[in-house]
Structure formats: structure tokens, C-alpha cells
Image (cartoon, rainbow, N blue to C red; front, side, top):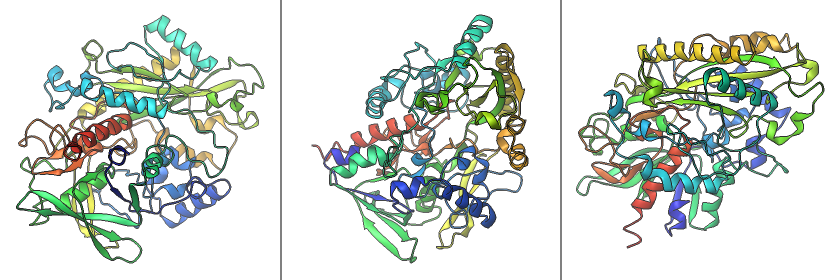
Length: 530
């Protein structure tokens, strides 16, 4: 959108198909039939672990047999892939949080890792433009660890959430704030895209310029580099239907394929794998992969809305990026002081926004809630993406992902669990499993085995917030891209998705990814604008 509205001609290369809204979003019972087929065939063997898989069209999750990857036997990684026009924006939860300078300059606080080469002030105009474009909802909370944005009014709390807010403030001085993001989509027709998807917002606007074309079912395999000028001169793509390869000449390449897919492309295009590829002076390409470490607890509280209340028909009562709340502890020094681990976390939650029908509930007069902690993961060179010796069905090397939680993450999870349980107790809640709350005996064994129901943290990848591996920095000895997201030795290639992150922060990353992209693209088009 940024490039096209500035007057450039843009080709969007997409590995998957271009579906209509009705095909992509699906409906019941068709989605359930496709889900059953995906389970039986093994097409979604790993991705079924994510809760979103069970409420969305499973066709939005890539066929793992066509897009395989490998991991060490003792280091599982759950990679959720969206291979279609719109990618994972079609399965995104819609939470939009800014990073603060406590994240951008975290190394100054505790001495670990590298600072970002940018600050909140560098992204502030881009954050604001995006928040206004997408009509993000939220409050101005005045928190240093979670900067305020330019937002539409917040959705109201549910009565049970308001009660929890009052009790946490009174007993612990804890701030419970409105979540910031998109409200639940209200589709009036099967042809309508949700605003939280690129198909219903930025891509739609880009296509409307007439300067954007889509090349679908074509996966970017490698970059062709001009060694004399140290610039990318073409992208080689593979047609996923007939296997044919095509060379696409270009002046500018913007890689935004999601972290792991981008790293696979860059590794295949770098000198160690391609003698004519670009050079990475730092030797850090692929290293420092991160995700958010998480834990979850379900609970129930007495109803504050009365028997037979019809709040589920109210759009503001549905779980969404804006229809929920946060406990934003964050990375503020006073919050982190004395903890047995580095960096911070936040807790996302909701009450009475996903309750099943009254007749399915074991305790009809209680409302269901959840608290999910997600915390910053330290960048570690041992956590990395490399190229496997094995190839996918089109003879393209697959990514090998080595990633595991360290002692710092394990200590953080223990602290999160204690905090979550304390908050539930203060709210008068009863900790319970989701399976024990409903009368569905056939489903109970599946729910009980779900990773969201386990005591320990799910493995990396589960939270779908993977970042790192091509970190931005102030010099080429310690980073892969510069502060404008350009490869140091190949500056007409921009790395703008999560791969460029030096550290993970604790906040949901999507808004920051978009702000980084907008900033980098505006800077890159300066030569074309004179």
C-alpha cells in the first residue's frame, strides 16, 4: 500500500492461492468437515494445537506436507503457516500494542543482548497512521511501559471484567486496562473481508491504485544478486502448480513472508548457500529466533449479568483484539526489580466473552474467563533457523528450526503462573479446566490434551509471535540489516517482518511489524520521489 500510493509499480508474490472471502472464511458445517479431513490426513498435524484452528476455516492453515520443516527430536516447534493471499492476517487475533523504549533499549537496563537502533519516537508517526487507518479501539492509559496511541473509543468491559478490575486495583494496585485492537468482525455478507485482514484493508487499498499485481501460487525461492553493484536484480520463484521456475527482475525487494519463511529465503540467497549470493558480514543470519513464552489458566466467576442474559448477541461482548483486557506489567524497571529473571511480561484475559450456550454449561450461573501470560524471550544464538539437507516437493531446501526455552523463560513462566493464580483468587474465581465446564463428553478428551490446557509452557511457535534471525542494528558486525531495514551488503532488499527484531518485547508484535514496514518503505522510495 505504501509503495503503490507513492506511485511505484508493485508485484506481490504469494506462495498460495487467491481465494474469495467466502472461500477463505468458510462456514459451518463445511469448516468442521475440512477440520476432520485435516486431522485424518495429517495435513495439519502440528497446527491443530493452536486454539485458532478450531474456530476458523482450516483451509487458512497450510498443508504441512507441502510446506514441511524439520526440528531436533527434543526441540518441537509449532510453526503456523498461512499460505494464501492475506497470509496470517486472516487468522490474526487483532491485538495492536505499541512497544516502548523499555523494549527498544532493554540492553541499557540489564546489559543483555543488543538494543534496537530505533526508538519509540522513530515509529510513533507510523504507529499513529496505522491506528487511525485501522480504527483501532482502546483507551489512553498513561503507561510508560505501553505507550498510548491514536485510537477510537474502547469497547466496554463486561460486568465481570469490571468487577475484576476493581478488585485487582483495590487489593494489589494492579492496572487492568482495555485491550487495544480490532473489534470482532460483523460480516453482513459472505463476500466481506474482516477489516483486520490485509484483504479488507491495506491490500484492498493497494489494489485500488491500479499499480499492484498479484502473482499467486508462486513461492520465492532465492534472490539473484548483482555482485558488482551488491544489489538484488531479480527474484526466482517456483510455480507451485507445475514446478516451473521464473525470474522476476526488480529494483526493490521487500521481504515480508513471516519470520521463518523470510529467513529461509535469505539463507538460500546468502553466500554460504549460494556462491553468487549476498554477504552477511555478521554471520548472524538465522540466529536469535524468538517467540513469546506463554502459559494459560481458565477459571469461572459468579455471574454479574443475571440469569438468561442475552449479552452474547451484543458484538461488544465477543472476544476480540478490542473485546478483552490486559494486565500490562511490562519491562518497567520498578516492575522487573528483584525478579529472578530478565525482562517482562503481560497478561491477556477476558471474562464472559466465549461462554458456550447455557444448556451446555455445567454451572450455568458462572461465567468463564481466561488469563494468558506472554513474556519476552531472550535472544540466543543457539535458537536458530538453518537450511535442511532435505527439500520440499518442489526441490526447495526446507527450514530446520532449533529452538527451546532456557532457564530465564522457565523462571518467567513460574512467576506468570503465580501471578495469574493470585489474580484469579482476588477476583473470587475458581481455577478450572475448560473441559470440566461443558457437557461435551466426546470433546473432553481432545480439550484435556490440548497444549492450552497443560500446566507447563507450550513449545516455541505456539504463540505465533516468532521474531528474530535477521536483526536490525547500528553496524554490520553485529546485525543483518541496518536501521532502515536494508541488508548491509545488499541495500535494495528490505527485511520488514519479524525477522528483523533484535529482541522480542512482550507485546503482541503485529502493529510494530506494520509500523516498521511503513517506515522502511517510505525511506526506500525517496530516490524515486527525487
